[in-house]
Image (cartoon, rainbow, N blue to C red; front, side):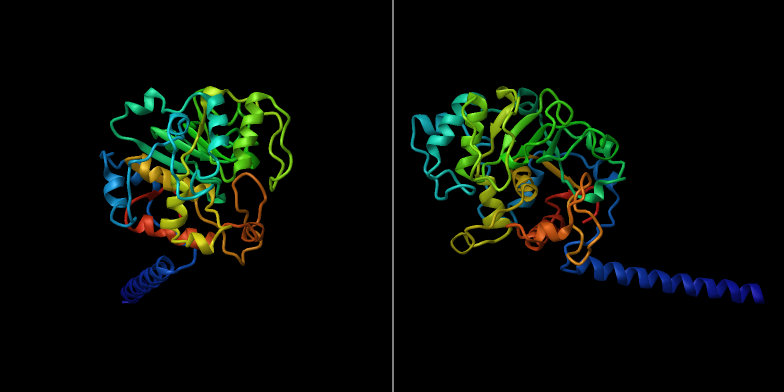
Length: 336
């Protein structure tokens, strides 16, 4: 009899525990806080079959005027013989920066995708964020299985291979974040993709490639003055994807938000949902603003308070990413 009562007691306790856990998770997932966790195991998403046009079909339902009719990278022919009309100036468009674009593109001389990417029937992509939740994730082998691995800014690969992998198809950067090791944090075929936030970014690239007198003023942080990159691996990303990130994913009003710039991470997601047929993300999400001890990145000791004083709108970006996750435009390999 005692054993029976004991068993019934344990059953009731387990039931109550399950209910409490369910309520906690439900509340957590419905929260507007941008540290929300996803309980989906990463290894399920990697097995999802890639269907051509899958992401486009999902994205078109929630993004106004979603379109594939835009070049991936800026091309010299768009500026040399014709007048490329853009509604916005950098970082949302090319208006007013045509000369700097032409000068930079004339030196890179490569504007197209590599053949191994062009001939893919279905592009399976992972955008690897720089978040601290990648630390001890052991996702390295999973990340390396994707056709296209997109990395951000100066996030290192060397010494972090177990968690972040070794493969890099594209690395999106701007001058102030170009401090990654070109030998250790990239593959020989990696595309170095400049995300131009301002005209000075294009001028910096021109001085590097042409070995001219370096520009030192006008940057929020001094960029590399010596940068031994292979021009064949350089590309300049079409600012259209920044426009989509800012004006459609974040819903910003350009006239009233002149200084607001999406992070490279959100812009990379914006690019991926136009470029790929399957988009997974890893390492996105930040600690709560009140968290004074958890680091933002997996590779340094930046704290949340340092990020909150930047021009980026982190809470808005979290809402945008949650929306994309909710509508299955993208999937998460970590938690968000």
